[in-house]
Image 1 (cartoon, rainbow, N blue to C red):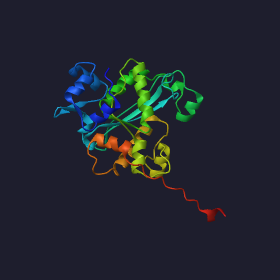
Image 2 (cartoon, rainbow, N blue to C red):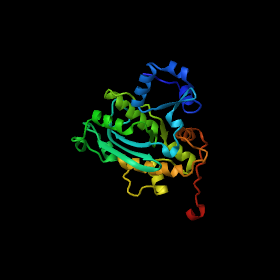
Image 3 (cartoon, rainbow, N blue to C red):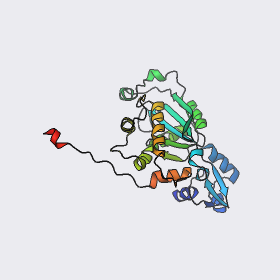
Image 4 (tube, rainbow, N blue to C red):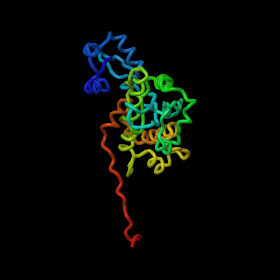
Length: 260
């Protein structure tokens, strides 16, 4: 399996990698490598003898973003698992498809059940992890993977893929915490807090996967209203979310007189 260095990833997302150099980095013949990586969620294009991520040439509103949220029975993918997944595909700032499923699980602690409302009994008739990961892999396709704290959701799902003998994710990714920190001034950036402060989704049920994914969609769309007009491609947006200056957090003003 071909693994690119961070430097190569940066080049693929911006100025491109010379074609001969790109081919030399691959562990398989070019056509096979491109096919395999496409199956893992990343597409490439060649232009003027350089290879780029396809997202480097895809305008923001022409790009498919898949906003994802998961509930798990613990925080460690080596021993825990996903118990629910919700995902919403967005293109041109419009929802075009949704996916949600519970996942069969024989071990859900009382603490997790109190947080999510999901009990072991609720998952008994749900599909197993392998089925859900296969279905989600097809649903996700080559969309940009978006989540609130994307590192957790992305790495956990990728680990689950490998647990059921699928290849890990290679999709380009974007974090809505990072986006919000650069477009919306707030004292805190937890999803529930932003939902309440910005009145994003009145029907939200926090810690249920599809509901949190829909809330994240609304936050993502709100953030898009405040990005610079100079951002054109999906890679521009990803780079902005990581590198642009964060907004200053508002200072809490305490009314001293009202307390005296």
